[in-house]
Length: 264
Image (cartoon, rainbow, N blue to C red; front, side, top):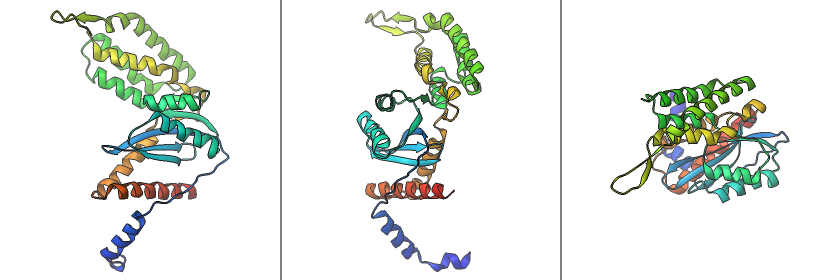
């Protein structure tokens, strides 16, 4: 180990590293297999966003984009490129709750099953309900949200949906009740946090259990979020790079990661 460490000087290693970061690699993933797509974005600075399109059944990144934010038109353009130019046969797509990603997916792949990330739905609802809700309505809704993790079969889905419908019939009117400010006569929701959790869950419901009918369709975007975590760990190690070199660093990271996966 000692001789290996002394084989190259720090200056030489920095020179090679700089040569890599002066340009970016390109590559193309090809397959005839149908793919199940994960789509998610992460911000690695205030106005730098990386959007990754990952074929989860292949464990490989098939496309990515550097941008300032998650723009619907850009994401739709990427999906059209994946479908028409790269020729991938997309059989299912899993996303978080980003409106722009969802609208782009619905525009390009209107008939392809779309799964909402169950973990994102749970996280968003629990952030509104809180871990220690005070009201019986909040406690019972929290129990339903946590119970999403246990829905694994068609019967589980029917049972959960029945419980949710019962909760809705009993509590929706109270949860959505409004009050009026005496000073300005403006109306407001009396239980707004709980209402937000309920509305989020209700809107996600049509695409919440697609994975039951399509077993190869991932129920979460956890794999891509873990990938983003690794990327950010590497960026912290190499903090101080210029913006251009950060982008090229990410290009190389994605390239080497995909190259490794292609050999597994």
